[in-house]
Every structure is written in C-alpha cells, then in structure tokens.
Image 1 (cartoon, rainbow, N blue to C red):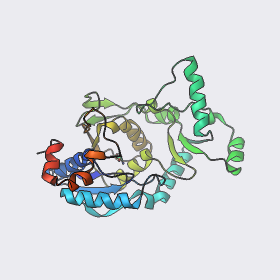
Image 2 (spheres, rainbow, N blue to C red; image 1 turned 135 degrees about the vertical axis):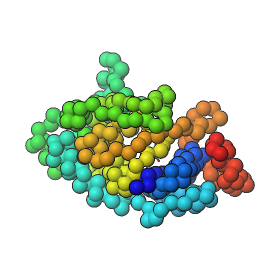
Image 3 (cartoon, rainbow, N blue to C red; image 1 turned 180 degrees about the vertical axis):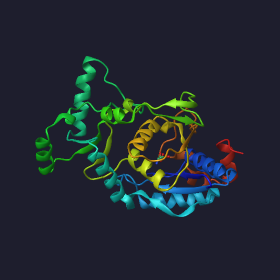
Image 4 (spheres, rainbow, N blue to C red; image 1 turned 90 degrees about the vertical axis):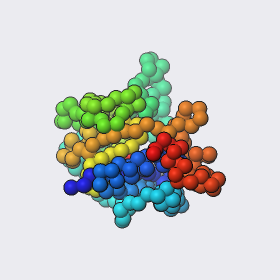
Length: 289
Ligand code: GLU
C-alpha cells in the first residue's frame, strides 16, 4: 500500500509562506515515496472559516504546482460522524458537560493564579479550572434542559488511566529538538473540550477521526502542533484507531522571529504572486530545493 500524506489547512485566512512550506513538503515527501497526497479542509470553526478562503486555498496550491486527490474532504460536511464518536466516548464514561462561560473560566483562573500560578497547557492556555466533572447527573440534566450553553470535555485523568503510557516515534523534530521516541503527555492539556453544544467536534477529535477514516499513514505538519500529538495518541488509543507516522517540521518565521499569522501581509502567497514572485522562488524562499 502506498503511504498516504495530507495537507489540512483551515480556511480562516489566506495562505502564507508557512502554509506553502508545509504543503510543498507534503507534496515532495509523497512524490519521493510514490505515495498519495490528500487535501483536507478543516472548516469546523464556522465563525472564522469562509468559502472565499477555501477557494483561495485551491487557487494558491494549484499555482504552487501541487496536485491532490479529489473529492476533498471538508470537515463541516461530516459533523454527524464526529457526533457518533463523541457518543462512543460518552458511553465509556469519559465525557462530561461543563457550563461555565469563557468569562467565568477566566475569573476562576485569575483566582487560582492569585494563590499560585495555575498550570497552562502546551499552547499557553490555562487548563480547565472548573469542577463540572463532579456535578450530579440531575444538575447536568437540568442545566442542559434549561438551554445553558455547554462544552463536552474529556475526563483526562480517567482517559489516561484507561490507556496507560503512550508515545510516538518522531521522524522530524519538536519545538525543542525532540526526535525519536517521545512520551505522550496528554494530561498536560487538562480536561480538553472535545465538542460544544453548537459544534459537535473540535480540532483534536476531527483530526484524529479523519486521519483514520482517510487512511492517512504520514502526518507531516508544523512543530507548533507537536504536543497536540499527545492528545491525538490518547484519542487513537481510546478509539482503537491506527497510529500514523509523525514528522513535525520547522516553522517559517517572519523577520522578527515570530510565527506567521493569518493576516499574511508581505508573506501571503497572493501578495507574492501579485508582485511577480514565481512558484520556484517560493520554494527557495522557504528553503526547499
Ligand atoms: N488545520 C490545522 C491548521 O491549519 C492543521 C491540522 C494538522 O495538520 O493536524 O493548523
């Protein structure tokens, strides 16, 4: 079976040089390995994703010289599949609803921080400080029935105790140069949100389900997602899904050493194209042969 690679952008902005590097690297790896390349549109965040950004993704990738298999999987068209998996995890007693608003969570964190620094997840966000895990079934039911918005969270301690220790072989490198065997640390993320009342999935859940459903064997993506792999390994173990090979790559940084942002400015592929930069020059800008 040929290896299966994927490039999985979110249509919440225009592509920049960082995306170009990731897409071209996946394309080159797939070609070198006589593998397949899939494109997946990760558009579950309906507040930020727009059809015009999706159209621009196709256009910019084609301009770069990329070819991918069709049909393209669009996550927003598969919400029912994600909902089914959430039910599977709920049936294992691993999911609970939490009802605090963002403002209430921020207040709880500030109160904790005033005593001693409250732990942050690998992305720097405070881990969930609330106590919704211990609400009684009756209270939960009452709050849900009253229409209070809620998030469905993974009971991380319970989930980790089910799977035992996990890890992966890193074929690229992490933000601190980690490579080879890496121990997963899903607990560092706390009780993550896997779905919300209005969106029955989350980045972590849909990426894991889709990689498995699409038969992805090679995950080549930026090192900013390195520690997300801990959560992905945990979900794969809980759902008995196969484990792809992981290769995290360096990030393309701007002149002052920061990660490129969605407001692409001078690094946007459309801006570069308008200035007469060629796809070949984009390759050399990101350090690819
Ligand atoms: N959709 C994610 C992003 O645009 C990438 C997901 C992944 O490669 O796992 O950052």
